[in-house]
Image (cartoon, rainbow, N blue to C red; front, side):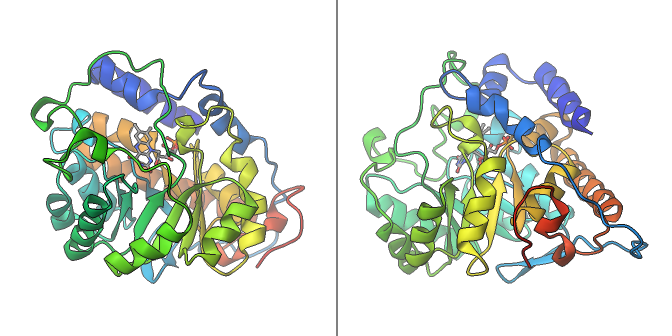
Length: 347
Ligand SMILES: Cc1cc2nc3c(=O)[nH]c(=O)nc-3n(C[C@H](O)[C@H](O)[C@H](O)COP(=O)(O)O)c2cc1C
């Protein structure tokens, strides 16, 4: 099943401008974390249940009050306009058709409102910028456009160097940066504010009136601090290996975070999730849902909105098969005892 995303990536690479492909594929520094992510999921082993009636398997869930057909979501990634002329508008259509949820990057190629018009349920990813007024206006704008939650990304106080990204990006009509959502703002004010602390969670919630999930958490103590500061969810992530290189794989960080957070708020995870069985492992280790980064970009480049929809449906159907083979008929039955050596049983 891994081959499926690898094949998609190879096909996308042929179609994409080489600089765009390098930008999407890159990790930071020596690319150690990006190289380890998928293998970390594959290192877990399963303990399937037998003699259960698995003739009907249900992958649906309710996530932060939103009903979804699948726990496989489209995570936030910048600049979809290099993969498809419609950019995030095409992505949003594909995601909605698959009954999933889109996390729209604040570095999108298309303006929030255009994406919102065609989207199903969506959340808005935000960085806290040096200019708090700009950030405040962004999150209020997302709320007005119909975002159901904010995803505050906290693993990027500075943008890490990516040696593979050397050439200018083919941004076409979209200008010299992903500015669809923050036009007319001076470059230094668009930078992430490296001085923020956990209080920003409550501030953004107040400014937007939306629940705030925190993305980029790898440690149990940080996860607990986020929950105490009012986070509505925690997303275990090392930013697809694009921030601190050698940051631990999310597949290995997840169990301790899930254990520390317990049932207080949902824990989500991303990074290197390439098959439905990876999704099964993630859910068994305590995630309520998973997010995809690069696979969505490859699918968008190869097949536009239809490609994104087909990708998400393929993950859903692989997950359904893996659940049946593991003896779980719904997501509540995907518990830690399915994973060998995962510690005490949850749920
Ligand atoms: C090209 C690219 C752009 C990204 N842009 C953002 C972003 O704007 N905001 C954010 O929170 N994460 C961003 N990410 C990180 C993803 O949300 C996610 O954490 C990561 O890609 C998951 O790993 P995967 O690509 O192996 O699925 C980006 C990732 C990629 C590959």
